Image (cartoon, rainbow, N blue to C red; front, top):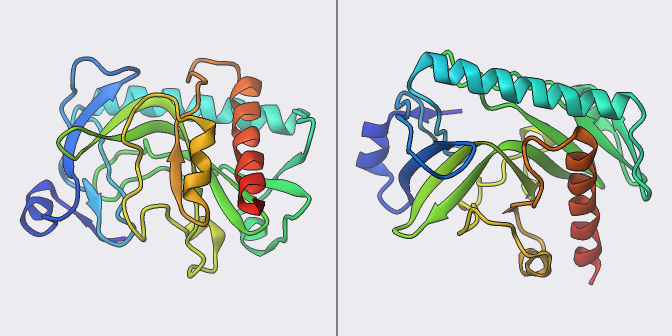
Length: 231
């Protein structure tokens, strides 16, 4: 990872979307952003996080607790009608073949180097050597070509980055920034436009929904992606 400051970003990354606004929960009052590690030149991931330490801590706690609830629901016997889910270690995720089940890894620390911020937690899933991610913040590109982020808002992504062997090290934006152009729900029929590509998907579920509701939407997304790849 090679994180750069806002000043460095503005100097050298002129062809990429600009840095936009940060919100909590919904689009409303923009929050002050941290600027120490706002962009990663290796993965092309944007990092919009609260400048205020207390706001960062509050959001990190909420995201950590929601992730734990979802993982606990899987371990406690959550069942999807079409496929089995199994929580695994990072090593198991990187080495297992997962044709008939979805492997789940949820132990990343969410740390953003040099910031003290641990907000970038997510849940990774693997099926048929494809990485999917359940994120607790929603990125989108607004008018004016600016990347914005809403913390405590659910977003899924599918990662096609097969040059990287270890599945948990793959990144959706590595071959081009692919955040959606809207913060609103993605229409399922549009998924076919991303055949063979990485993309982000905005589900209808809320951060405050029950873990089982979020999980069902996430698994449905994975299965829809698989079906449309066959078409």
